[in-house]
Length: 330
Image (cartoon, rainbow, N blue to C red; front, top):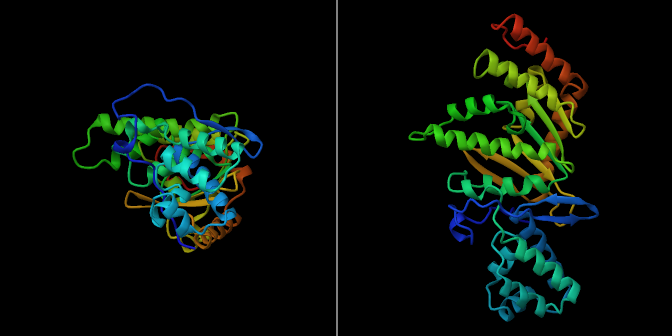
């Protein structure tokens, strides 16, 4: 099975222009009996595509016949089923007709197709969001479980506003203004809102000890960041573990990664990796399994999450009494 690289629909291909700042309608749908979950268009396209694929596999025609009858190439049919292209209602209607879908099946898939053409919550910033990262933004809120391994910094979803501003300022590209940096900060804070939703996904973090020995932003910013982690540890659906330098994290994973597990079996599990600003989503079961095994090994070797809040408070107190403290967790 090949790896499918997923992406959100570019701004210019959407019906809603970048300049349109009207609040988007919440896209909510029921997933396997779970309470309604805010889902981005990519997640909805993937579910609709998977249901179309299931209907195709039940009909007597093979893929080639279906593509010919629907007046599309086999490669386009494949992209429709993987959710990697936008869904045109006429194409979806043609496929449902060929598959002799029942009225209930037809209505369900068409409803998903319509919703998939709604703009993402981040659409006003899509002109600068890095390649592939838009897909992660669409999929995160629909996950039942998010797992993050981060060896370099405090993970995005745990960052305080001041720490995020510091990190993003350090990563500023030539020619970027303070206004652009501030928009990135606000986008990061909006991502974090899902941690405080009633139906928030479970989120598990494993952070390298070395990342907590980089007090970026100065004394007050770093102390505030440690206190932010301690507070988030109190949320019942958030787990934070610290991986000691001696645990050999880099030997288990070459770089940071995020894995997503969805309640809907049609989405399954995905892994997100980032290299030089580009985000890649991996769907190949072999690739996903490799990263999940690494995640399990990292969690086993990390400190118990029950100690994390205590460690963060202790570090913050050290910075109150001794701003030169090197951040060692011992």
